[in-house]
Amino acid sequence: MHRTLSAAGDGGDGDDRAGEMTTAHRAASALANARFPVERAGNGHLCAGSGSALPPDIAAKVEDHPCYSEEAHHHFARMHVPVAPACNIQCHYCNRKFNCASENRPGVVSALLTPEQALIKVRAVAQAIPQLSVVGIAGPGDALANPGPTLRTCALIARHLPGMKLCLSTNGLALPEHVEAIAAAGVTHVTVTVNMIDPEVGERIYPWIDFRGKRYLGREASRILSERQLEGIALLAARGILVKVNSVLIPGVNDAHLPLVCRRVRSLGCFIYNVMPLVSAPEHGTHYGLAGQRGPTAAELEAVQRACGGTFVMRHCRQCRADAVGLLGEDRRAEFELSRLSGVPDLDGGPARELHRRAAARQRSESARARARAMERAATVGALRVRVAVATRGGGRVNEHFGHAREFQVYEAGRAGATLIGVRRVANYCLGGEAAEGAMEGVLRALSDCAAVLVSKVGRCPAERLRQAGIEAVDRYAFAFIEEAVLAHLRACADRGAQVEDDDGPRPPSVSSIGANEDPSSRQPP
Ligand code: CLF
Ligand code: SF4
Image (cartoon, rainbow, N blue to C red; front, side, top):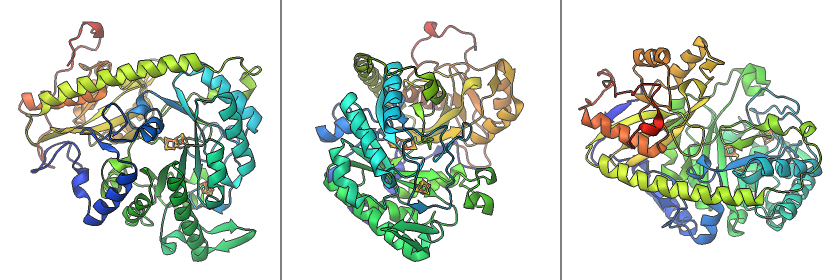
């Protein structure tokens, strides 16, 4: 089991991932950072806030994009419009579904939209959700295998909602010849899925591609695909479009290969790299699902992310559906089904978005000050490190009840700061006042490497179940900023003389959990 509370060696700090970089990786990193010098804040954020090292034009692209900035994802929402049904390749992990309401994975939608329908939906969402900052086209097929609908949708949104960011996701096969059209359509962010740079690995992922009117199989298909992907990434970067690369982690197929992929795409100007765990189950009907290919464990995912290194790697991806709506981790698509939208709204919600933007900026400044104060207090914890889960429903605060949480954000804290490790999805424990015992088992499994879970509220029964599993339920930081709370918990662990834990060692003693019914407004900031 991963250590939950541990002593780091010399140099152990809040972001020792950077210390794992090889010389070659440093060189690649230096090259990429020469183009996009990401601020390496102690908290591990890709940060475009005040004092950022990012050039202003890049900072403007990053600061409110929930996928390109970890911090922004607490405050800003995205939506996907499913206008791209076709695909020009086959991935062994893909089975697209166009009328599925239940599966929560990429390639799945409730209904396809025309570009005109997409515009109606975007305007409706923009009016209702002031956090909306970006509209993406992420399938359910490939955005650039459907260039007509994709580019027309972008043009319509750019014309009617000029401040909205436009984002595409593609497998990259048709990318090189579309870079200029993408830029002309106002697209500022493109994600390319790159699962390999070696055709020998690729032939275990892609059975075929369709390229210039011909079907290619096996290794030849992967060679062409890889060349096109890498060429497209370099062209995008040269054109000033921010590039994110997604890689699907497939245990036993490309897990050892992904650090090479990461280095290569970074050397070409990729801005941020995202390792996504394979989603594989027989009921999905994919080749891998039916063949029994498993997805990675949380520990395996984390190991590959660490091998890829540092703050370059995204940790907050939610593997969205192609019709997702809301904050990452939030699912509001049912509110905006086309059949519910009566006519085109007259307003685009611009004033409300601007108000939200200002409020978010104030919150982020306040959070940064709180983090700085908490880091000062945590500076003397020595080598102590602690891993905790956090229940949040947005705003960057510990503000979700334990029983309502559908996911937990897992942080690791040390004297140099708090770093997001990943997001663990769960079934929520509380169903209309009834406890779901099966869900509790899932939560305990998902948080088995955490010493504590920070929540806004927790009942006595679940708190006791957690305690028996060695996980402390802590509600004393309710409504505090997340990193402030995580660092305050680290400080509390140090203050009570927590013992360094090794794999066979004792669990830490319980940190006080103020009564579940206490009025949060009466609390002192941690
Ligand atoms: Fe959508 Fe992707 Fe644009 Fe984001 S999602 S097209 S970059 S606006 Fe984000 Fe969703 Fe992860 Fe994608 S959380 S799956 S990284
Ligand atoms: Fe499916 Fe995307 Fe692969 Fe096409 S590129 S087969 S849509 S996962």
